[in-house]
Length: 163
Image 1 (cartoon, rainbow, N blue to C red):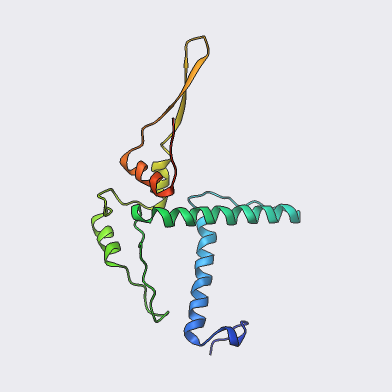
Image 2: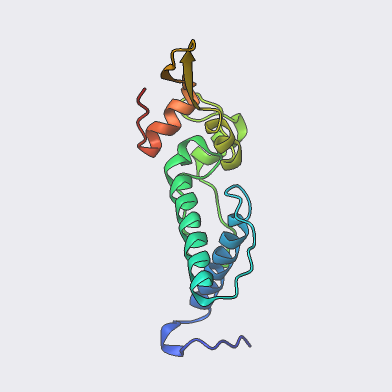
């Protein structure tokens, strides 16, 4: 017998309980991911205002990472169209496009598929250099040229890079 503190009227049976439990697993995985590619380390605060601010920043960072994963899904090994199983206990099934992407390690556009961490690392190589000419102090900015992968990622994120 499964027991829960949730009100009985909010759950329509065992399947509903399993879905709620899986949502808890997603939330726990989110906290684990915050510590990974977006590199938020544990900080111990004692003042309530600082604790609230830290939780807000962590939540905001997770949301940004979540939104980026959603937008960058065509370039990632992620399933762009996950299928919702009728039975919440049944194993998840990957779509045909996700299977094709995983087996070939390329996207539908012919670019190399990446993990989220690897794609962030690839985007991290874009930079703006300030070039100083002689002793006169004249300067100008020079952007590194984006690779096709970086250009597509920036396009999916809705980011325009101007000189």
